[in-house]
Length: 286
Image (cartoon, rainbow, N blue to C red; front, side, top):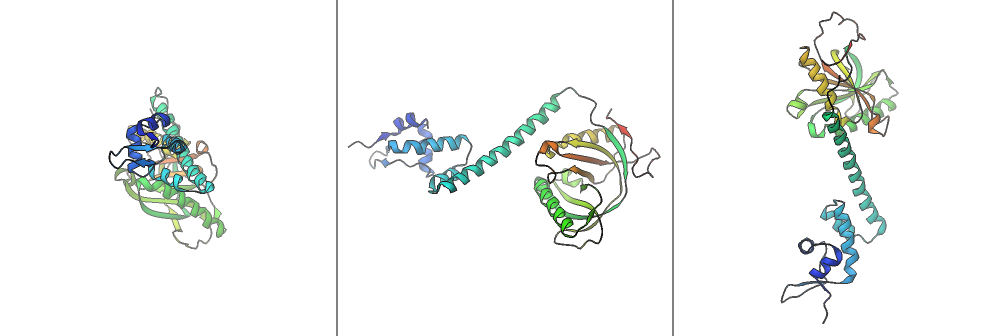
């Protein structure tokens, strides 16, 4: 009696190797139509070819085996499409991160230029609403996005007058020890009522060297590098938290390339201009 296609024949038809077909059988992804009890030989039917082709395409898209299994086990077309769409969204996010990393690497490989414009700024203490927490470095970006959205919601609900750009204050330990205190704030005037994680906060005054970062936050290390290099070369850097001001943040635009962030590095000023809160001195790293 004909028992269908042997595993080698099915392999040639589907472009799935014999080793792959055996693996998919073992993990319950694509079982043969028949397994000979005496010899252990696997046989497949032509009706299984479309299923094998779907598996091949999904695996080429790096869909994990458990997710592929879920797609195949879902009889409802809408639910299947939702699973596939969710995976495609993850791929698009990965592609965006890869493209940003490639662009950043190309920038690093370019001949050295003058670097970003750097200004000195005396920042006075400022009342704000804030969320502060000790976080792990690997979680800080997702924590930051959630905290920023929560602050905007509370500011709107309490009709607070926003008195400047939102910002962040980050302990050096967040970088040096991969865990430290992070504060996200919105300068605000008025009577603030604490709600959940949101509390009144006095943003401390500081002397800062500031550079503007344009584009996605996952390349902001380049701007930090330029600022840190400048501070070290001019021997003006001091210990203290790092500062950011979000002139255009993800709540203002859906395009990462349009983000604008001021990065502040704590410094000691000896130029005699410390009393003027808006005094700036432009310069480039030398």
